[in-house]
Length: 135
Image: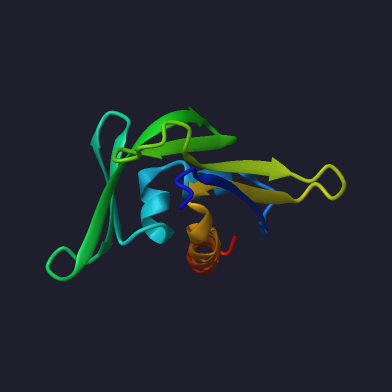
């Protein structure tokens, strides 16, 4: 079985031309907490805890460190329990040169057999982002 992770790159169109509005949703704990997980908190400088599910029931919590953060451009994370030092997940704001419209570019890593599931996970994340923010 192949244990080398593959990079998944996806772009999602956004319904705004304001990078500031997008950044509020992807670059702040408050914004991320609205759509990425059920609960997100900063547990120390540059380390966040993401929980899916409720703390009093079945839930799953992971911690991630912020590797890079450039306001109104991108934020890159790495899971604290990540064995592959090259694997990260990133959200980057892009702008179409042709139309001027914004898009969100996602890079993430998974084992080859998990790539389709990861793509589906990001599709679901983006549906929630659109529902809560209109983006």
